[in-house]
Image (tube, rainbow over all chains, first blue to last red; front, side, top):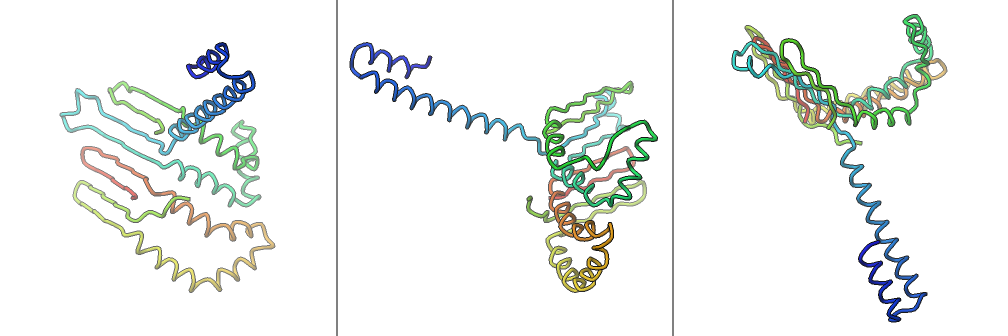
Length: 147
Length: 92
């Protein structure tokens, strides 16, 4: 129970407002607080919506000063991934059948034609929780994440 | 849809060669548009010829998807460094 709701109930118990007024005020408060909750939820969703896929390979901190190290820093916009997946719509059906056949030969029973725009959106949203963190034997840190 | 990228920076450093380039993509867009307008009759004929075949849909969709792909490149960054070589590509 919020402070405002308590105040309304106190005013009702003291007879300052009628039952109808209290009911009306409580409804107003509920709708306002519900609206605030939905706004903050929408804001947090917008914040968590992934924009970039990052792949980084960082050298072992001990070997960093030697100069004999490899570094990778790749940032791919999620919209580019989305557009790339959409390119599958340009693949003619003949080629799709060949792709499906090749996948089946490898033991993957998947129909490429079944990929829809909604599935792509869902896949990209799911990528928001992706995080791969690998440390190699050489001490290199490989990170794949979205931001 | 994203705004189209304006610049592309390419920097390649090898053992005995260095190459750096700032590519003004905003200047290439009007150029590509002019080429597209000049070639539009040929493109139209190609689409009409291909439309009954299975290649019809890809032929119609290729230009809008290429534009979308181009716009989506904004923010792309590839930075790969090794002791002797370096490749740096960024699209802004």
